[in-house]
Image 1 (cartoon, one colour):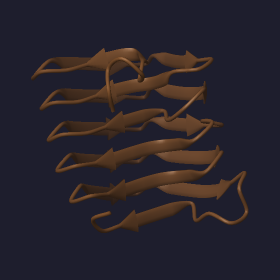
Image 2 (cartoon, rainbow, N blue to C red):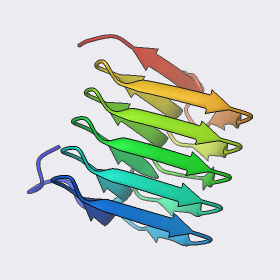
Image 3 (cartoon, rainbow, N blue to C red):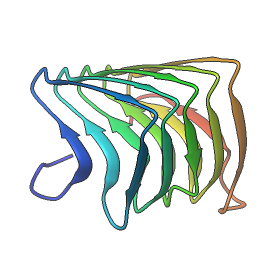
Length: 134
């Protein structure tokens, strides 16, 4: 995404790093966390809820590690991973997101261990979607 048109409650760029623990992240219009350009996010027992876009979105070789996090009613996706980014989710739950619970595409990778992914508000979309290059 273009920084002129994409915003986030937490906006990580250019090899920056952020650690969240026991937090609650909410946003009316923006992403919960936008991690881009080789940035790193580590979050544990954090609630991403009622976020206007995706709870966590990562692009361009960013790395995200989520443990025991909950994504609830994110307007677009719970977690979106694109463009050589790497996401690891352990013991997370993703519930009732607008379009997809988890979306991984364009060479990104996502590893899930002990996670629970349920339903979307869009009955035509899968709760988890993996797509190749577009």
